[in-house]
Every structure is written in structure tokens, then in C-alpha cells.
Amino acid sequence: LLFFGRFHHDKGAKEAIEIARTCGRKLVMAGIIQDEDYFKKHVKPFIDDGQFTYVGSAGPEKRNDLLGKAAALLHPINFTEPFGLSVIESMACGTPVIAINRGSMSELIQDGKNGFLVSNTDEAIKAVERVKGIDRAYCRKTVEGHFTIDHMVEKYIAAYEQMLEMTKREDLK
Image (cartoon, rainbow, N blue to C red; front, side, top):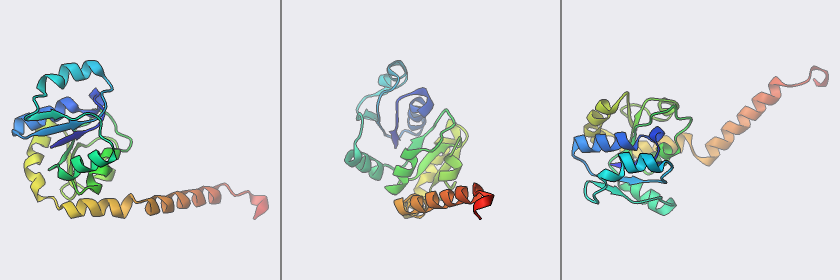
């Protein structure tokens, strides 16, 4: 399992440890330490380079390797996530995501198809055992169908055209 994000209460590293610990699964953790006190209290005591490993911040190559080899990305957020770039990066590598269903998660994850949307850590623990049934190629196709540069450019152009149409001056028609 992989936790990939800022070490801060919002991102749920503590919950990711609880999930992995209960499941008896290895957890690799990567990201910047944004809240030093949170890290020292809720993460560092568990780092044993066995079941729980902290690998620091991960650049693009290391990120892709970590995400591509993970059984799942744990995203047990404690806030209303506006987007979730790590969720998209995970699926781009073919790795399903288990996320707390807050903010944009329901727009990114199709429950049971490219990951699981859960309400709490107990549901996330149950989802870990079901993650084997997720088609990793489908995870990748989700990103290819909705989050490529070409797709994003098309959406921006459509939004700009809509704004222009809505703000046309009557005297110029």
C-alpha cells in the first residue's frame, strides 16, 4: 500500500497507518512533511523500515515507480479535497485508489471500477481486500479518457466559448 501526499492532518497519514496496520500490509509513505508536530506524533513512531517505510519526497521518476508498484493508493483525507492530483497520478500508473468520499473524490473515482470510495477507515480496511478485483488497465483508461492534456484543452476551450457566448454584447450581434 502507498500513502503519497503531504504529511498533515488533512491528508490522513495517521489513518493510512491505521488501515495498513489493521490489514497487516506493508505501507510505503512518500511526501513532504508539512506539519512537523503531526509527523512526529502520528507517523514517525511507526516507521520501522519493515511494515512502515518513509521514503521522503518523491520526484517524477520515483513517484511513478512507487505508484506503479503499489497495490493501492490510500487517500484517507480529512478535508474537502478540491481535486486530488495524487489520485489521478496513481490511476495513470494503473494503481487503484481507496479514498474517503469527500470533495472531488466522487468525480475522480468510480467506486468498484478504478478504486473505492469509503466513509471511514473501517470501510477502507474492507476495501483493501477487494482491491485485487480492480482492473489496473481500467484505472489507466480513466485518466486517458478524462485527464490528458488534449482533453483538458478541449474543456477549457469549451468553457471559454460558453463564457463568450454568455457575455456577448447585444449591440455587436
